[in-house]
Structure formats: C-alpha cells, structure tokens
Image (cartoon, rainbow, N blue to C red; front, side):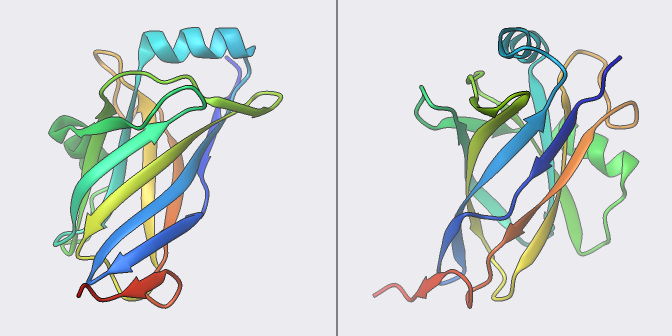
Length: 169
C-alpha cells in the first residue's frame, strides 16, 4: 500500500482577546491517488482528528472548510479522544480531545497529490505564550484506532505576543 502523509502547518493568523484565541491553520495531506480517487476514499472512510490541549483549555468551536463550502463543524467525539490517550498517554496537565466532521468537504488541491482544508478553532484558556498542539488524524471506519495507523502533525497556536491582542471593552 502506498504511503499517505499529513501535517498541520503553523497558524496563519489569530486573535487573542482576554484569553480567548480564534486561530486558523491549514491541514495538508499528501496522498498516492488521483484527486477523484482521493475524494472517493475520504468520503467513504471519513476521518477522525485528535488534538492535545492543556486540561483547562476548552474548545468553543472547531470548523474546517474547502473551496466550495462554508465552515463545517468538527464535532467533539470522546471515543476518538480516548483512543488517542490510550496510544499516547497525555501528561496529567493535558488531555486529548477528539473530533469528527459533521459532513465531508472536498479539499483544495494545492499541487499534484496534495490536498488542503482550512481549520478554524476558538479556544478559551489560551496561553499568553505560543503553544504547540500535537495532532493525530486517522480514518474513521468502524474498527479504526490510532494504534493501527495515523498521521501526525502539530499546530503552533500563537501566544498573545504573536497574535493581535486586545482587551474587551
């Protein structure tokens, strides 16, 4: 079977208002298929995403989108979070949060064999300094687990000094 590669890139922008971070990033997947085969495979198998946050941080909203869609929610999924924690136990000050898409969205095809979606997250309890968030992604078929296969990456969330910071009036 040919290899798939995935990675999250650093946040493209973000706002930190009184500890609430609103940030965007790109989720990139490199795959060994034609764009048509890629869409068919991802639509059939779906995907699950797990992110490791500080225990006190809360995700208010998490969405993704492609070129022909508005923002589509990534819904919390406790089973996905538990699966990630079983494979990569978090430090006691951290936790894995799992997410699955409300519906599938076709990606941007940025070059041959590279697909991209835009992610957007609104997070409370944001750090004042930069934060590197570990990320895992896998297919979301009935028996899929992170112990069998996954793509990994990281999301560099901007700290207050890097994001546009202001206090609510």
